Amino acid sequence: MPEPLTSPFRAAAHAAADLVADYLAAVPERPVWQPMAPAARERLLAAALPQSGRELTELLRTIEAEVLPAPMGNGHPRFFGWVNSAPAPAGVLATLAAAAMNPSSAGGDHADVHLERTVVRWLAELVGFPHRVGAGLLTSGTSMATIVCLAAARGRAAARLGHDVRADGLAGLPPLVGYLSAETHSCVRKAAELLGLGSRQLRVVAGDAEGRLDPVALRAAIAADRAAGRVPFLVVASAGTVNTGAVDAFEPLADLCAEQGLWLHVDGAYGAFGVLDPALAPRYAGLARADSLALDPHKWLGVPVDCGCALVRDGEQLRETFSLVPAYLRDEAGDGLGWYSEYGIEQTRPFRALKVWATIAHRGRSGLAADIAHCTRLARRLGELVAADPELELLAPVETSIVAFRARPAGLGATGLNALNQALPAAVQRRGRAFVTGTVLAGREALRACLLNAATTEADLTVLLDEVRAAAGDLTTRQ
View 1 (cartoon, helix red, strand yellow):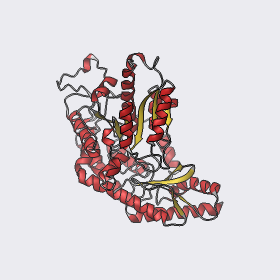
View 2: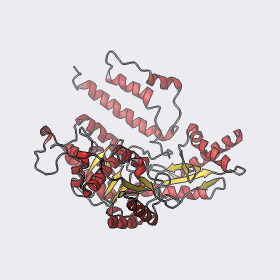
View 3: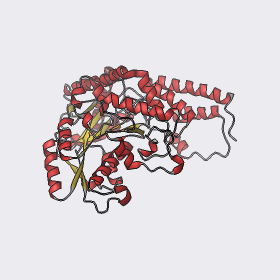
């Protein structure tokens, strides 16, 4: 039998709080990231299944010695990699309380279910998306939210053709075609593949240098597919593209989708929260006209992983797509909304809402907006520093908080520059003072710095560029 939750647990819980607080306080003074020592890695990989239990305090000592010294690095103010945020302190605390309750948030009359209704509404309000109760739910991330939203779009398209896709699958349907840009996140292709639509039915539409969808090219692609007997049904726009953070022009896309009867889905995983910065807000005009929007509170808001959100305009369409209620799970509450498990894929669902609630409630709208504006201001400053440096090259305008650039030392041709910049991210990471990742933009190897941490300062930007130049110098010398 498990031991009763008396004094040993209380003592260990206090020790855990101190351990986590000490860890978070020390993060800025530590290397951002370092490769694990082979022996330390092997200890984790080769750990034997224990035959007898260990005391809670002993487990904490192991966590302190073996786990906390080897972080991903995303809590550090000089972590500029991918789109991974530092955890919001309020979210860290709420995660513990949610784990202590450990409900299944599939449905029923308990706090987590009702709190999820509230935080989904809050998220919609933050980004200005119209929301009716029941027309959204929390997910593991935008990858899952995208599957949820595209499944609803597929269901609507099939129903308009007189076809029940849930009962009959896609057999007998003409090809359903979706449209996106070259910079659209890979989760959209994964969703299309998993939903049986097929990646060949996704049209990559021409765009500008930063990957924004061109409405003129989109219209031509739609016309060509209709003429060939295919059925256009979906347009995927981006509120912050993967490589440069560019925001699509939503108004003309929404006009075209309304005219053509297409579902407009917006991938706002990271970038949609940029609308909270008054300097950026005009770029998001028309976002509210989308049929669905996928968000990741665990990105720019700092909610501890995992937490995504699917928002849809038509909640009934979402329910028609997923609802399958066995007798033992019938909703008896009388609110008419049913369980969350009727609106998505998960049946047993974790209590994600508490950490979202705590994160937003702790900072408030004004605090979140200030944090995001701080990040976008620093991103613009980083762009200025890059543009002013003859050894560096800015590869795209800075729109949100992603800066795409590369090292450009004198004397290297195109092939040499690509080789250098391909090697640079790992070289910078190993040095431990900053963390940046790489990408390919318009055929050129690039560095991609994403700023999400409100604790980052302009001095941290200086360190990043110093490290890039130093690592580039080392690599060039070896060539």
